[in-house]
Image 1 (cartoon, one colour):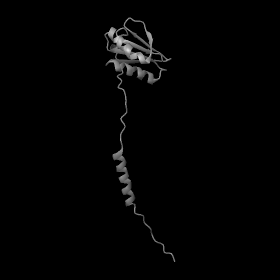
Image 2 (cartoon, helix red, strand yellow):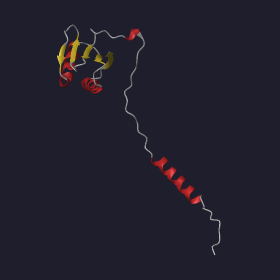
Image 3 (cartoon, rainbow, N blue to C red):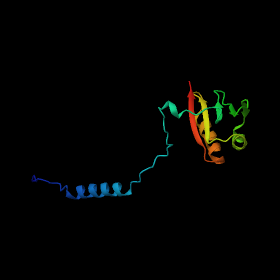
Length: 132
């Protein structure tokens, strides 16, 4: 009738394919470079920047942008007019520092948009403060 036979499965071809797939995935993997901003958090109190010797931008919780520089009173500006106002402030005040004071409730997108507008005018040093 039927004869019982031992059936052995040869695992070598399967292991070869697994190693080939492993090598393929290792070689074709592309590593994503994360975009980031370098932040130097200063613990030193001597690194303080005076508000009168800098351009001061305040972003409120209602997403209003206020600008003050020199001895001028602060005034409300639009996001689109940040560049023009920074250029005007640079013409009147000799500084390389901009202080951005943002409320903790403000969306990061608005703060980075303001920073982009500042960087578009010249190479200024931007200091960021957060208010709870």
